[in-house]
Image 1 (cartoon, rainbow, N blue to C red):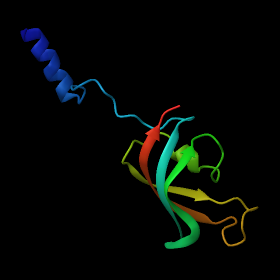
Image 2 (image 1 turned 90 degrees about the vertical axis):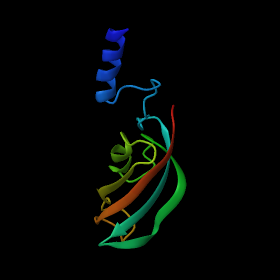
Image 3 (image 1 turned 60 degrees about the vertical axis):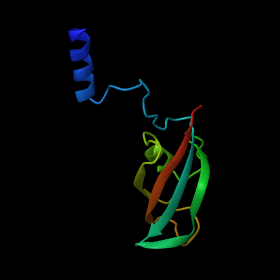
Length: 110
């Protein structure tokens, strides 16, 4: 019993003790539900905001580079995602670097 207790103590120190559940992280192919807001030069731009938006990672639905930066996020995590819009995009955003403030609300695995 002492050996089991010491193993549990080591696991607890490593943050591995508990019910065995791992916090899921978003993987390519998962659908994540996100809230996001896009900012250009610190100002929120029109059409760059949504709440509870379902996004299938790897679908290419968003601007290149966006989905790649959501991969690895966990539920409840917030992150600033920096991207540059393609030069063949809407004139106000074409070729511009923007920041999306993103929060993962839920992860729906494959």
